[in-house]
Image (cartoon, rainbow, N blue to C red):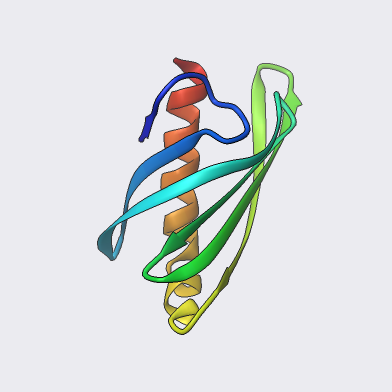
Amino acid sequence: MVCEGPLAVGSRLRITVKAGIQVKLLLTVAELIPERCVTMHGKILGMKLIRSYILESKGHETIVTASGEVSGLLAWLVRRSGQALSYEIVQALKQKIES
């Protein structure tokens, strides 16, 4: 993942996702409440993508609940790969937050 500067509303993140095929995503942070939630908007294969992550502290761990929406002609294809897509995005965000 590439994100110039600190993670903030308006930040643009470039993420390479390997969900069956390698896809490059450009996501923009639309909402960010530190240590609580982040929502990003972007496009993938010409479709609109919204990804939301809710973070919940549990002692020394953080539980992440992911959700998303996709609309467009090939939305079914992205939905089918949703779990792998979500995992890749969560790992990229984790690295950014921890650095």
